[in-house]
Every structure is written in C-alpha cells, then in structure tokens.
Length: 478
Image 1 (cartoon, rainbow, N blue to C red):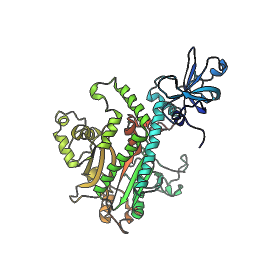
Image 2: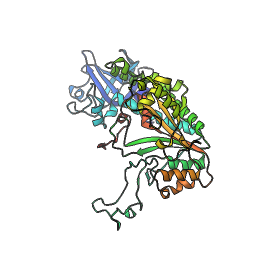
Image 3: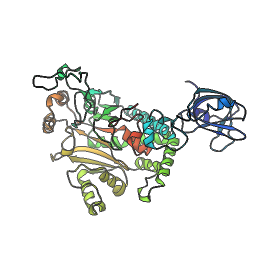
C-alpha cells in the first residue's frame, strides 16, 4: 500500500524505531538548540514535527528546506518533547524532492483570503482549510455510495451528453462539433443540426433524473451521482456552472416514503462525517469561530458541530406549502416588513423565508410539501385539487433548501397534458412518456446538489470553496 502516511505515523507508539516521512514543509523554525520542520502529506490536518540538531546539516541544504518544498525525512520516532503532538521524528537524513522558492511560492505561513486562494486553486489544497474540505468531501461521497448500496439501490450512470432538458430551464451548455466559423444552414436560414455529430441539438446534462426514472422502472431502486451543468449567468455564493448531483429514483415509493428516505439519508451521511472527520470538523469549527469574532452577536453562526447535531438529532418538521405561507404571513418579520421578498400563496419561497421556518419558527429542519404546480416541474404528480403537486423540499439551517423532490406523475394523459402546458415538444420526450404506457407504477425521487451538502457540513460560505476546481461565469481556469 506504499509508504506509511503521516496520519499512521502520528498514531504509532514511539520506540526509537526508524521511520521514513514524506511530505511538504509547512514551516521551518531554527533556535539555538534545534531546527524544527513541520511536515504534512495531506493524510491528516495534523503536521508531524521533525527535529535536527544545529550543525547536523549544511547551510546549503537547509536553505532549500522552505515552506512548500517537498522532503523525504528518515529518522527515529521518539516521544515529543514539545506540547501539541505525542511523537516527533529525530532526523537522520533529509532528501529534498522539490524546492519552493520563498520569493515566488504564494502560500507563505500567514492568513490568506479565500478570494486569493481561488486564484491559485492549483495550490490551495495544500492549505489546512482546503485539505480539510477535500477530505470531508471524500468522506461524504463515500458515505453516499455506502448508504445506497446498503439500502439495496443500484448505481446508474446517466448520460452527461443529452438531448433533453429535464428542468425545462433552458440554461444549457451546447455540445457541438460544427465549425463555428462556417455553420451549415437550412433553407430557412436556421443552423442545420442534422449535420452535427449527433444529427440533432445536444447539450450537457442539467439532471440525470429522467434517465434515472427509466432505471427505477426496471430495477426498482436506483441512484445517480454525477456531474451536472447549468449555464446560468449567476455570480452568487450558491451557484456553480458544474456541480455534482445525487438523485435517487424509486419505484413504488409515494410522497411519504420519499420524505422518509430523504430524512434518513441526510442524517446518516452527516453522521458518517461526524464520526470519521472529527479533526477536520474541529479545525473548521475553530476557523469559523475565529471569523465570527469580528461580527455582531446576532450575525454569528451556530458552532459547526452544534449545527450538524441539530440536523442529526431532530425529527424533521413536516408541513404543506400552504401551512408554511400562513405561518409566514403571521410572522413578525412579515408584519414589520423585514422580509426582502413579499409573502403570498403562489410565490416561490426565497432563502430568507425558508430559513425563518427552520431557524426561528420550528428550530429544526423542515420538509415542505404540496407546492403550487405553477412553480414546480412538469413531471410532478398532481394532487386531487389540481392546484398543487406532490413535491417535497427539505430545508436546513443556514442555507434553506438542500433537497428537492417529488412523487412523479405516472398517469400518461396527465403527464402529456403537463408537458404540453409548459411548452415542451412531446416528441423530444417520447421515451419518457412511453414508460407511462408500458407497466406504469407510482414512483418518486429527489435531488441533492452534493456541493450544497459539502457547504453545509464544512460551514463554508461560498460554494466555490467546496469543489476543487470551481466553474462559474468567466472562469474555467485550471
């Protein structure tokens, strides 16, 4: 399995045994009695301290041991003399794999702004904050697969290139091999996509849901977990042009079953992170507390671990959209005109409304159901009243909506009616409609933007900081 990592060495009992440590220098300190090198290899938030005696190595060699340089250190594992770590390495030999010129290496041991680190995304994983985020991101992704595998779900790979727009949003990245300087035209003057690679218009997927439903109609329970793309010109802290989506689809699940699954799923996945990422979460919690010191009391966030326990320990409050609107209309912020956006039946709730319900009114996560059909997608099952659909959104503290889902419309005629109503050409969705003709069944599913989950669990405030290489308007660097 390769050489021992720092994570393992730090947990080894010191018996003066010989060890080899490989990693990047975080800091080097020289005192009268010793030279201290802090090394990190990304396996843990903690550095290992390596100690040399003055005069043990040439000044020439030590001048290449600077923040960012990469070393192989061989030495004896001994009990640490200093506080903060149980073991340290008494150095016998140093091999420099790669130097990092202090004049040009941008990650010197000082506080860097997140904006600055976004400009050097190729190096930011070497900071404590980003290595912690990426380890947590891995743990959450692993927990997602483990949860569904243990629950009898099958992992379905849905296409990245599609010819359908699942959300009807129209904000898609086009995929083409046509020569943009010499586009083929039809007699009417329109672009002739028949000459394109796929013989028709194609785009990057906005969701794997529709194809996921096809899988559920054969395998009963499937989930997708893959990249999705939205060409929204949105420069907010909550939007990315490329992100990962988790979308389970289940045959024979009705709205209630869907809600139960969504609640159990997020609780189990967050619990996994609480158990397996303790050190990283503690580090991020302290980082957040440090940032909050400069803010007025009412603007400070709930301590990170407390916020995560808040979700794991509380049963989610369930109510209809209509009941939620009544609560908001009677609320103090509405009466005092403190909400930025108006409240009324038929509105698409904004984040401030969702957060009021979670943080102020119920003081626990909330699942809202039965939204007006006008503000929801065409595939959602109509309620008996014909006005609302069997949608469900899970709302969390700090961010509002984290999961959106619904029972899907399984009645062919009703679904066809909705497809026409929203202006989609039924021809483009013939295969989707056809599943309602051949052995249709009640079925449900939901979508969770993975970065939203990572944002919540890490306590970060900008979604561009929870994906290694963020894609957003005017930015496709790295």
